[in-house]
Length: 118
Image (tube, rainbow, N blue to C red; front, side):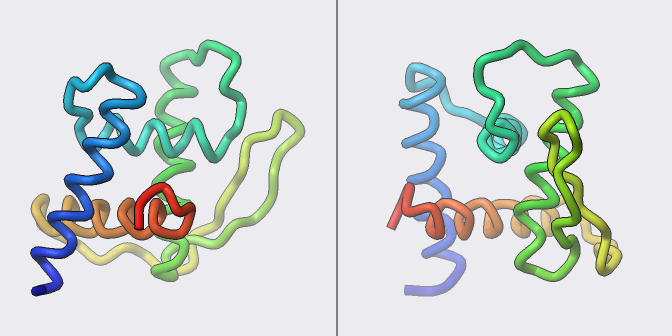
């Protein structure tokens, strides 16, 4: 199977499983999935988040997702339990479609590693 086709199938499996678990089957988009990963990484599931905290959750997820690609490195967890990352390498300038593919690939890899999908 071609790499692109495999990624597409794995992505659709991630979307389906997460949508069923968190959105009563309504299809989650890329941003919603990134947000869920941020929640998972922070681990503070029993509270409400302000708008700026929601943006920070997405940032945590993006850093975590792109860490294996060498763009970010985990640095420390602050006193409030929020993980912080440092930039190792600037992201290349990518077109919107290329960014989407990179993030989908990173998300699929994240869920393969956590054994949410296989």
